[in-house]
Image (cartoon, rainbow, N blue to C red; front, side, top):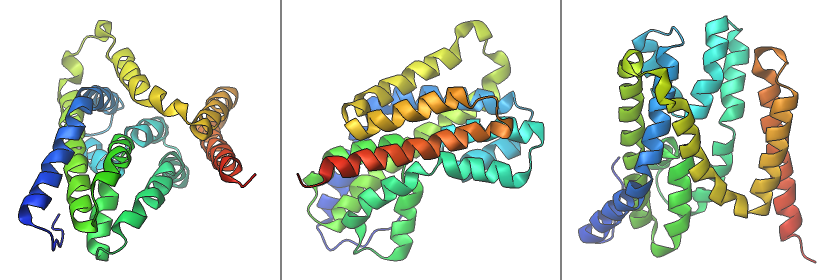
Length: 239
């Protein structure tokens, strides 16, 4: 993605390389979850072209896994789309959080940055945002982080798609992917709003699991978001 930059070329290049480097330590966890997602798509009965298209369109393992059972069961398209939107609703919050730093960029560039937002790329960017003092170098840093995650995710997903038949179930790859997710998720629980929202969403997702078409998951996600936002506002309210 081209980013207008009045800054020195070296500054933009350094920011981009720093983004790649900061994403590198987390690549193994991202790749593990991507492989798990690819295997799940391969075993769902979707054609390879459909699986690749879903991965590119959704670009979110949670949404892909949530919609696979619905696609396989022939659920109404509206239910499938709504489920994907609800699972990905957190990206609205991510986008709102990073938006101030890119407000001066053209719409086309902001849309490109928006497409690259992911759970891990968002966390990495927010940790290091203060290092960059202008929108252009900040954007190059985010592109470095985002492209690194994008490449690792899709390579891992394709490996899972093509190697699904050759990966023995005894390897417990799904459990390895779960552990990788936990390693990424647990540190975020230090935030009280995240902890509150996660607890509510997890409890409701289990309690409402019998509901048809995974609709209980949609309710659980919405409830978790509401609780997290309410907790955050209460924390920031003047005392």
